[in-house]
Image (cartoon, rainbow over all chains, first blue to last red; front, top):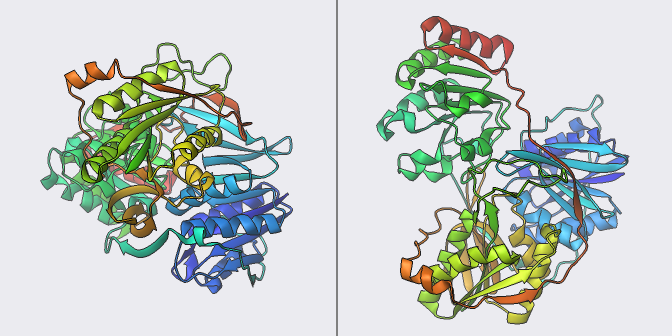
Amino acid sequence: MKIIVLLEPSGNSIKRSSLESITAARALGATSIHGFMYGGDANSAQIAGEYGLSDIAHTPATEYSSTAAATSLAQFAKSESASAIIVAANAAGKEIAPRVAVKLEAGYIPDCVGLALVNGLIQGTRPVYAGKARIAVSATTAMSVYALRPNVFTARKAENATSVNVRTFTPQLSESDTRVKVTNVIRNEGKLDVLEADIIVSGGRGLKGPENFHLVENLADKLSAAVGASRAVVDAGWRPHGEQVGQTGKTVSPNMYVACGISGAVQHLAGMSSSKVIVAINKDKEAPIFKVADYGIVGDVFDVLPVLSQKIGAVTGK
Amino acid sequence: MNIIVCVSQVPDTTTKIAVGADGKTIEKNGVKFILNPYDEYAIEEGLQLREKFGGTVTALTVGNDSSKDILRTALAMGADKAVLISDSGNSDTFGIAHSIAEYAKTVVPDLIILGRQSIDYDSFAMASMVGELLSLPSISMVSSWTINGSSITAERDIEGGKEVIEASLPCVISAQKGLNNPRYPKLPDIMKAKSKPIDAVTGASVPARVTTVSMELPQTQRRGIILNDSEHDITELVRLLHEDAKVI
């Protein structure tokens, strides 16, 4: 079984989600794994060697086009006669993967939180219906494409690091492949995005007003965490939409998710229930958030958060 | 401007989900079905573009007789036309994309608009698949955009910021929350929509490329340690996070 992994450049390295994809491919027992990178600096992918990936194909690009990236990846996978492609289910992966699957007449299994080899077939497990159910899915086609939910699979270094050989892959692109292109990227400066954070501290209606969110921000500071928000407080205009966690916001899987004054409506749970550790603070002991919590404190956020921030600060040194 | 808006029927988010007798899909009895919430943004965007540029808005769904409800909602909001592409009920995402694309080939739209995801299977795949099948550019999760002649400048959400994207019509886009404020249909329009025609089209059936092996309800394997708000308990929580969970 030959697996192609999409590697996404990030600064002078590659995204952690790409390393997670390599680890997942290794865990499936692939006979060979090849990395593919579109655009960026090929040297930035050297870290992949620590994760056991030795062969990387790179298609240089001066500007990013999701359609050109998809065409390039599909052509590379075909040239390698690969049987599976793994990408991260992030903003880029979710645009590229469906196109690659259509081009290769491959089954597409998005948003996987588990991958397993069952009777020789790769089976993806994924949440559906806002996480209220899970399905195991396999492809009926010779080739298949999987998108992995970021931060659910753990990136693990290989026992023996290998040296990385980068080769250039030149795709055959037509005019229609570059009709959509990224002309600018606007970064949220000085603010950690919930999609990129290891820890998220989220606030809900229990904060009673936007002026009280400093309690959430203060705890987030002590934890070097991103600030998140429930739909209710975003709809009320207390917090920006970019912070919203949940079905109509962002789906996150941080190492720790701290829900402050959030009751835990099913739409919110859909966006955070794959978090590794969930902490809930709510004064209503019947709040549904406690049903998914590893640790809960039944109490008023106005009383609990200042004490908790101070005590966590003593541990983290912030 | 000739606009197709694709809509889908999904279980209400608050519906209780049970696994059906086949062990692979949900038990549909007793489930309340609604118009996929993101599709409201797609319909609204189509209507606003028609108001600005003229043309027609066709609401389209792939489904069965029960899907007519959501088409009537689209008509009540102001869509000019509704199309129901019949489906075996066994289609996967690709099969549905294929049906949409085959229909689109017959009407050659300037624009196809979808919601960013349907809240049943949350695949985020339809805009890209339809775009690919029609050899059209696609932009998913558009949070704001402008159309100037045939040029499109759009913003879409990415990790840690936004991307500015340029593309050209004809194009496929999927709508992010915040793109607009969907209108509520007025009662007289809801009444009128009940008697408007819905065009029936037979879908082109293609073999499914993925198959569901099993469905189950997830078991929570959480520690479930619930403490109170005393200083002692808060100290204990910090110790547990530090020593047991090792997250701080």
